[in-house]
Length: 514
Image 1 (spheres, rainbow, N blue to C red):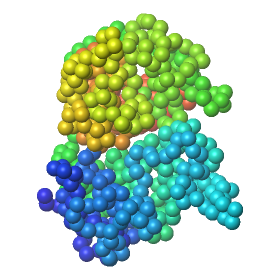
Image 2 (image 1 turned 180 degrees about the horizontal axis):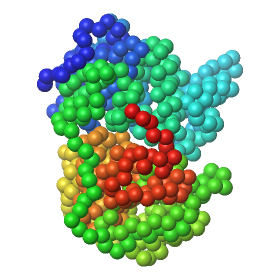
Image 3 (image 1 turned 180 degrees about the vertical axis):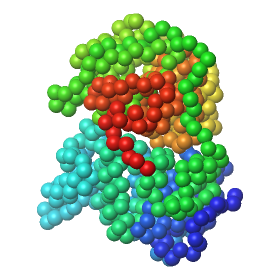
Image 4 (image 1 turned 90 degrees about the vertical axis):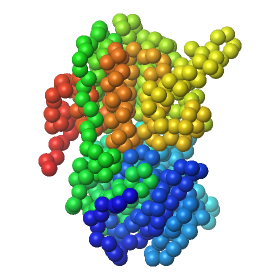
């Protein structure tokens, strides 16, 4: 495949490079002779759809996996990494897309796990805590070093992952989806940290599906597609259209609200709902909120991190308790029902963190798909394997999952296809209302379009869809109605003709002029 290149060849500032690197897993060719350069003190952004080979390339460069062929060149000399520890000892660190924290350990212990600071009497916990506080301060996060990671929200856990990588003092830092769970303010702080690092000569590789966001920080852009490099350029020579065209072969949007049918009766009614802060602050994360959604209607909830979006959806689904109000499903009060009982009644949630809350990593694709509806295959003490296989095969077709079959390991799928498994699992319960919390988190633009198309199709069949997002572009896609939340309350409601600036203003977010 020819490469559209706008970068002058022969640059002598390359510190780490892949030369004709290929990686195969059996008959699957994840990488096909890729050449990739990381430049000193620059941000090189790697774009590509899920399954394009981005993470595989980064794992090779950081010593996690070994290439099938090709070579790795560090400071002009060919090297072989025996492990990620070997690569780290040579100054190369990686922040993986999926968090690798120990939830039962403190923030301090996670940051220094495996490389504890020692003194004459053993581990110097006081010095570790001091350095942890400094890292949190640098990242503008007020997190106590002794807080167990499991008590942190997802965005804060992402900050801890970033802090752990920064603590190694690497000269090459690979960031695989570092902002997928961060608020706009946290992203801004991270970008300042990145610029500070590059000013000191640190090289950054940045991978993100937030294309417009990535354009703000990149110096060089490289696009992978189906394991091959399709384009590379300097940041000054590219725009969003260039990225999308080279990623997927065409420029397309995330769709538009489905039309040609009428909404049904109210499917979900949220009445005066309040959700307390589990941290015991006394404040309500959702404050006396009321909202009705009709059958066939697609409603989007937009808000900054901390606006109460996630807490609202999790309370409606039964995962969080409320201090007041009701949740009515087709007029029936389900407020006191368990999560399983609400699913049986037709209320399903696709959670924000698919790895922690949506999938069982030790199960196959098929077992994950049938998990939420397993009761429908049981008669007495027997499980009807034939009926279960039928549902699995149908779900794979219905939500267009790219997999070798129901017996494949869930970890063998790309992030976008794993998200489809979570959505397919909930749709298999035949819901009347489906709730989705950040349904496109960590998936590429092509997979996003497929997910939103899938939701639009289900809405035309009479399912009520309520999804939350922190990306304005996703509000302006398939939603018939947009709800803006701010500090636990609804601050504005709009139709599909709203502008990006109106949504951001209603959320309290500053609108940055181009």
